[in-house]
Image 1 (cartoon, rainbow, N blue to C red):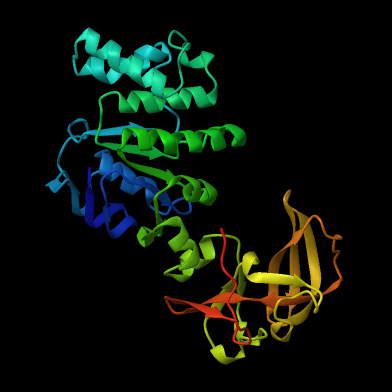
Image 2: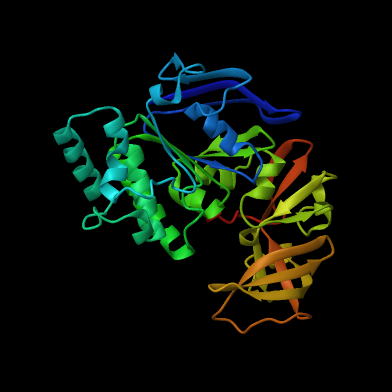
Length: 352
């Protein structure tokens, strides 16, 4: 199913949850609505589902306006954050519920339930009740139930929020593979950046009721369109006077700039790839992050964060280090620009 949204607005009293949002989603895409809590993600999802009525704008499914179409007639499957399984029903009865409501024949229901139990890896659990399942298993039942009526659009409201971290990672991989097999247009809401980057074909950054940017995870990470996206995605330090950084003196005055750890190289003057573009700083803080040390370095322009390998001798607060910043994002009003260190010869590639 192809989705087109034009000027979608929604108010709750004086609060405007959606402010003229417009976007297109191609058929079969897996889309992540990413943004902070209260930004409007779930409201937009619920309007797509028909659970909220827009105050303005249009929602088109394959070119058909559905603003006034009942939820059960939109051809969607919805997975709620709390699963919403029927506690008194077995796994197979939960999955079969939508088909039973549609009064499908028993053999059709049995065949479809069997297919979904296989697809979702629930074989052997058919007769269990929800309280006899793990969180990950309950989530799989919720997915299977949503897919049973063969919807053209699958909507997921923070589908992994109630699951522990290890199972959540496993389910992300499983979900992406399952959606590819089914080939259904899918939209999921999340405030977890790692989840969105790992799962989604495209990400929509939603903040303050507005769509800040739509694009692939790599595009959004490397080419943020607005100051909010540059500050929200990835780990960042915000500097008020980036023109004080070595190699960035010619940028002039801008509102502020963002520096990401992967843009920062730390070491001795001899170790850095462009020593003439580096400057000396002092280590302010050192934090163990599992795969590496996180180093906060005080420069004249402010504090920047870098990564330090566990294979190297650990740094400590007060140590003097040389710091090379390869690039920054500058903000001038709502304009965002990528600026390379002017004293370098070759830019350093960005990796997620």
